[in-house]
Image (cartoon, rainbow, N blue to C red):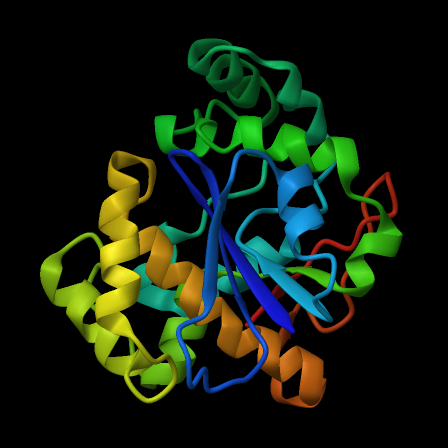
Length: 234
């Protein structure tokens, strides 16, 4: 079994499958927090997660974020720099951005990036170096680009979403069933979040069956102060 998790308005959307390509629609679940993600994926050999795991020290950025931006080129803006761990105590965007400016030569932080803080706090509670033997950070846009062989249109636009469904056509059965499930979730789950969770299964399969077919940025990832590897897989 392999699993992939992506953040969504309701928490996390998780896709789980035994086979890849998935001849039957993957099992889907919406989890309210990351501890629940770990619980529902307990039987999975690999879980890929679209969220920073290892975090940098004050005033520093992660090499993996820099490398991911280089790989994505024109789509580099889809990579948010993981914030230093000390900033996770901020409870407002203003405080977070002000403190970020103090560490990074006046550079603030977007409201979208601040939206990750609560999820980063969830990982802080449960993640350990031991968990990283099967829980890996990934960036969906890198996986999409590898599958397509080129950058894709923005997934928040209809053209971009359709391009991604086309790429999944031979890999994931039951688009109609998956789409209906997503619609029943309403505003708790956006279509692009579901797509990113589904494409993560392709990476999960590579890691579970032949890790040499997956790429880690950087090749020899450093560890943060808690011993967590700072890396991005695709």
